[in-house]
Image (cartoon, rainbow, N blue to C red; front, side, top):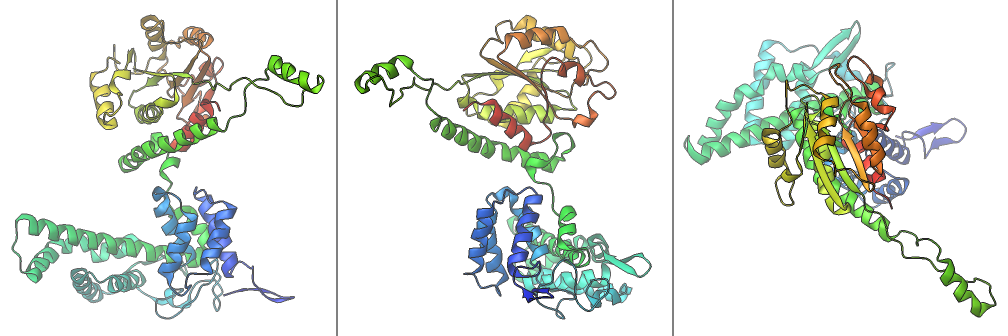
Amino acid sequence: MTGMNPATGPDPHGPHSLPGRLVAFAGALREAGLPVSTSETVDAAKAMTVVPLVDRQALHAGLAATLCKRGAHREAFDRLFDLWWPTVIGEPGTLSGYQGGGEAEGTESGRAPAVAEHALADPEDVERLRLELAEVLLSGEETELRRLAAQAVARLGAAEIQPGRQSYFAYRALRALSPDTLKAQLVAALLAQRGEHEGGLAEQVARHTVSERIDRFRDLVESEVRRRLAEEKGPTAMGRTAVPALAEQVDFLRATRVELDTMRREVAPLARRLAGRLSARRRRGRNGRLDVRRTMRAAVSTGGVPLQTHHRPHRPHKPEIVLLCDVSGSVAGFAHFTLLLVMALREQFTRVRAFAFVDTCDEVTRYFVPGQDPAGALDAMVRDAQVVWFDGHSDYGRSLEAFERDNPDAVGPRTSLLILGDARNNFRATGVHVLRRLSAQARHTYWLNPEPASQWDSADSVAGVYGDVVPMVECRNVAQLADFVRRLLPA
C-alpha cells in the first residue's frame, strides 16, 4: 500500500510505500540498538530490487544479510522484521498485503475488523483445539503449526481490557491449551509411530523432538500476538516493548542468569573485535614528533626552505593495567565481565595485574593465565582468593589500605589503575587518603561504577567522596565497558 499525497497522488516515498517502510524499519533497528548505517540501508534497498518481494523468506534473508551484522542481534532483528513485514494483515486468510502503522482501512480504531468479534471458546472448543494441537505436534508440519497458533490466539488469547476494546495475550492461549501436558502422550505416540520402544536413546530423542515442537508452537503463538498488537498500536510503538534488550545493553546488576550466560559468550568475540580495531588504529597512526634537526639538514639542498619534513618514529604507548575489583555479591558479575574483557585484551597492554577485594585484598592475576577456561578461572578465584577478612561485607577503606601495604610496587608512573565497584561502603571508613596517594602515583586512575549515576551518594554510597579524587565513570553494561576500554587504549 502506498502513501497518498493530496496534491500529486500516490507518494512513492510515503510511510506506507516500500522505500518508506524500509527506512522506518532501519530506524526501528537503530532504536533497538543494532548498528545500521545509511550505506547499509541503501544496500538493503538494492537487495529488495533483486529478491522476489512476494517471497517473504527471501526478503527476510536479503534484509538480514545487509542490516544485521552479528549473530547476537538476530533475535531482535527477527522480531522487528515480523512487526514491520508481517505474514498477513488482519485475520489470517481474510486480508493480505502490507498496511502501515496500525492504520488499517475500513475501521475507525485502525484495527482489522474481524479480530474484535471473537469470544472466548467454550470447553468443547478448547478440547477440540487440544486434540488438533496434539495431531499437529506429532506431525511437526510448520504450516499447520502456524495456522493453529493463529487460531488459538484468535479464539483463546483475546481479553477485554476496557469496555469496547480487546487485546491479545499469549499466556491466555497457552494456558488454555497447556501444550506441556501433552508431552508424555506425544512421546509415546512418536515412539509407536517410529516402531521404537520406551527407554534408552530412542526415548531421549523423542522427548527432545517433542520439546522442540512445543517450544516452536509457543514461539508462533507469541509472534502472532505481537503481530496483532502491532496492527493495533503500530509497529514502532510495539517494537519498543516486544524486542528484548541486546546482550551488550543489559545492566550487569539486573541481568538474569540466562542473560549473564549470553553476555559471557559475548565477551570473547567483543575482545577480539576491539583488539583488532585498536591494532589497526595504531598501524594507521600518524607520524611521531617533528625531527627539527633532520628537517633543517635536508633543507640545505633547497636553499634553507624545508620542502619536506622529517619525523621521529611513532612509538605508541602501551599502558600497564592494574584492576582493583570489588567481588562482593552485589557487584561480582560486573567485576567478572571486566576481568574477562581486560584479560582477553592482555596483548594490548604491557602488563596486566588484577586484585580482588571484599573487606581485604588479594592478587588474582594467577587465575587468568592464557588458555585457561574463563568460567573455571572465575570459580577458582571466588573459592580460593583471600578477599574476606571479617564479615564479608564491602569495606573499601580497609581494602585500599591492604592493597597499598601489600603491593607497594603495583602502581607506577606508567600504570592505569582501574577500580571497579559500586562505592557502597556499609558506612565504614572510606580510606580516601589512600586513594589520593594511589592516584598521584599512577599515570591514570578511573573508577568504574555499575550503578546508574542517579543512585550515587544514596544510602551507604560514597561515590561522591571518591569521585572528588578520581573520575567516576558510569559503566552499567558491556557496551559501555567496551567504549571505556577503547578510550583507555591510546592510538
